[in-house]
Image (cartoon, rainbow, N blue to C red; front, side, top):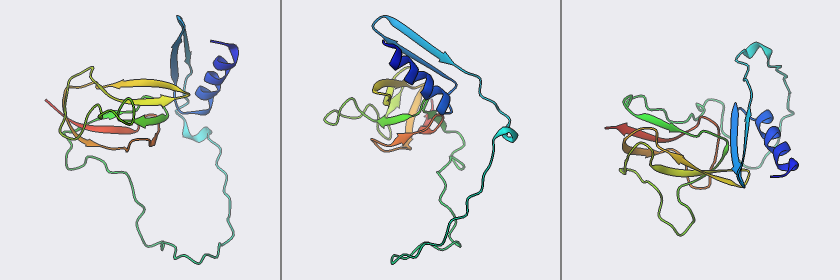
Length: 156
């Protein structure tokens, strides 16, 4: 691994919400860790006023409630498998392969449930619980954030 790759990894950690990153390549392991500040008061906030935009297509009115991601409110016994990093979600090893899991699939702790690609590295994501996949929360090829729910699992 050359210095440029290590510098890119450090930059990735600095510019994202992740607190640690571990990469292995050619018998060399690089770990980068940083402490995230939990104080919201230290984040500067700026306000930008935008000029009105005239459009020929109808725009949604402000009276519509904003769409929020679904959370397991009625199914509070479901447990989320979350993305451990920022990247791209893949449900299978390649487009022709069948997905690792689907709705209704049984998983055991340690089973591979998906792949998250980050900086050309394909990271296999393992289930941290045993149970049944109740819902797949993202689509194949979607960008995912650190801590974003990928699957909802009903534990055994």
